[in-house]
Length: 109
Image (cartoon, rainbow, N blue to C red; front, side, top):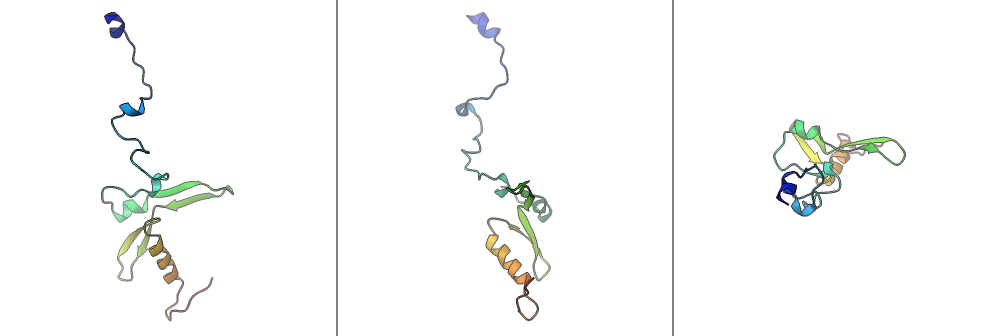
């Protein structure tokens, strides 16, 4: 019996869920779309600007690419990264402001 254990060949196979050292995606309660996640560590505007939330074809076959963060410039010139989910309302406000002229009149395209 002892010789059997010594001669046993261990091949790389999937481990049972209960023997994993780290929690899996479901156990960590991650969103279905990894692009929606906000990094645990701070990131620069440049790093955020390169993240992609969606990069796939839609139902019509058109290829859709959506950034995780939208980079906007404040009136004082400061750049700000707005997360496409968390800051959706602020992104809408920025778009609304972009469609108004100097007198506050709505510009229709």
